[in-house]
Length: 325
Figure 1 (cartoon, rainbow, N blue to C red):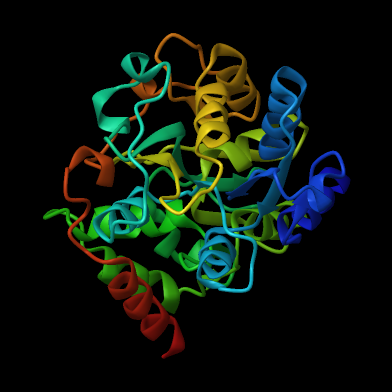
Figure 2 (cartoon, one colour):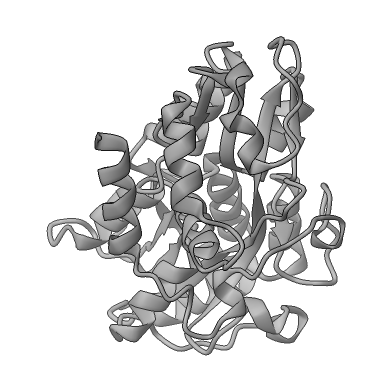
């Protein structure tokens, strides 16, 4: 529980400054979604290897996008998000600097574009508290059963890019009506709980018995540190959601931004990614958790050149409307 609180507190911080670099105008500025320990480690290791200072702004997807839109904020040189579709929208708007980083050929073609590449890959999973007195769920729809009434939570897609990608991907599936499922779960007491860390906190503290659609790396880390939970990959399938890493077109630190992306995709950087239970983008660095070949996968946004076909704003608006009724 203490570890969960520390991680939650870290995720709520809107700015983390590495090695006192805030006053250094020439420092590289990186905006990143969680987990907070990962971007802190990447920044520290990059500084140790290159001597380049890194200012880090870390938050959930909603916070990172709001920061990008804030004209008064220090502009980002590099951005790491949790939603592939959002990166595609940014690319279409001409906001990104094309770059082919070192290690590009070791990344699956599904996780690279001329404008951005994956830092790593995660999936969305069910989380179940094993001592909750409820049956172990095996698929998304199981949480609509009466046994889970008022004891289920989920992540707000406005704050989690991976949750957003899952809903958009399921919306594109002909055999899954995600909006009917979400309506049934809402009737069974499903409540959105902010970020992945906030949703996990509700299960760890015992307030919820199960969670719908949580980034698996968050739950796998908690399980590894003793949380009484199971991380369940749904029988009908889930999506692999890549974490896009991009260089902003307006950066004044082009050389250092490219070096940072190169470092994240180096073996050292990818090992940092693996240590946080995220699947490395490079196919020659082994994950420290179940790989994609062990999980039934549905087509995901990065598997389609144009994305899911459903805009971020459209998904968020429909989700907010559903849960405001």
